[in-house]
Length: 366
Image (cartoon, rainbow, N blue to C red; front, side, top):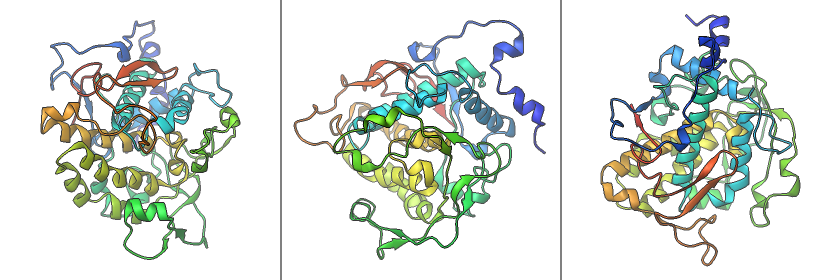
């Protein structure tokens, strides 16, 4: 049984409206940890399928709330507080991917969104961002799962199916990085067009698409301009089963150092984006799909597990602050390396964000 439309709608309003008066919120991004931060007091980040129906509805409603809050960034394409996160990701993409700050930057990016969900949209204070534990979703098609079955407490549906599409052509870059074991083509997903039912059905996104071909020359001058179009998905179970299975998770957590960890993580990272397709396959604009947060929160969970196995790993980094780590562009990352988030929050260092139970954080994965 699902909650009524009225109850679901009520979750869109910040808690100040519920209680009938203004409340002074603590800006979580500026908090530092205290001795009171324990596993019992920490914010809980739960796997999507282990959340209650109320908790899943609360997540959906908080995201929808941010999509209806005014933006802070004076960028034409940013029409909401949620779009500010998309614009931030676009602006710094080539400084925070396939390099030494990828994990640290995304950890704090998730924290900043979580803070706005709490401060602006009344997201339950004990609850953090959910995560997507990939091997739990291999027993049936993803479009029939709790994530994408189109019910009110899902993330909406797959995209409308487009028949008779040619197979996906495997590029040399894909073949080298992901080591696909067979010929030059892969099967298409089960969607391909606009999401059609449930939360975010026919949702309009503002940015992109932006081709990876701009990476060598930089973002085009018009990247800030709005280009309204629907949220597209093309769920593809082949990628999920090939790249995000339990063996891949076990191998990742058995990594002996940060270089090996990052190397084994990248196919898992790409696998999540390729599995969803559509907006999630846009290297720059992927946060436009709300599944982005569950995917990256799970990557953070895996990193947290690996770090916790040896506290010395919290100060292990590999690479620079430049895409693909070319020599001579930016220094090697260390604890003092600054990472930036335009209008979303102040700069932090990689050392500041190395521990989920210290610095600005107090959260656990359950």
